[in-house]
Length: 134
Image 1 (cartoon, one colour):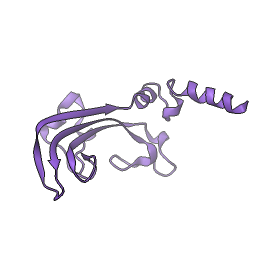
Image 2 (tube, one colour; image 1 turned 180 degrees about the horizontal axis):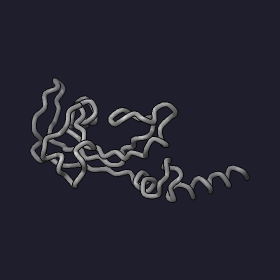
Image 3 (tube, rainbow, N blue to C red; image 1 turned 45 degrees about the vertical axis):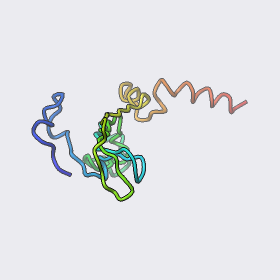
Image 4 (cartoon, rainbow, N blue to C red; image 1 turned 90 degrees about the vertical axis):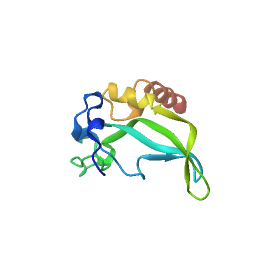
């Protein structure tokens, strides 16, 4: 893991100690062994020590923290096509793919440690519970 460049530290007013550059294993997306691929960026939310598994409350990111850190958004910068030999060539039309988990954002905004406890999924769980009791 390395720290990002100075320009990366100034994005959106995020303190520099909250921005991490991870290796290709963690920050490079590809669908399979061949095809479109590129670097990615992920946004994690820290639910705090109370969300961690016992004994893992003080782990710092990028360690897992036992459920403390949850990915809520990602961006994939599709820049290359990887062929069967592993060689990557630039795509003629690079693009950005982005994804955010609605249920994850809802849980964060509602202060819920589990997606299943947010107001999007809780009614479904209650209905299922009532239905299964019959």
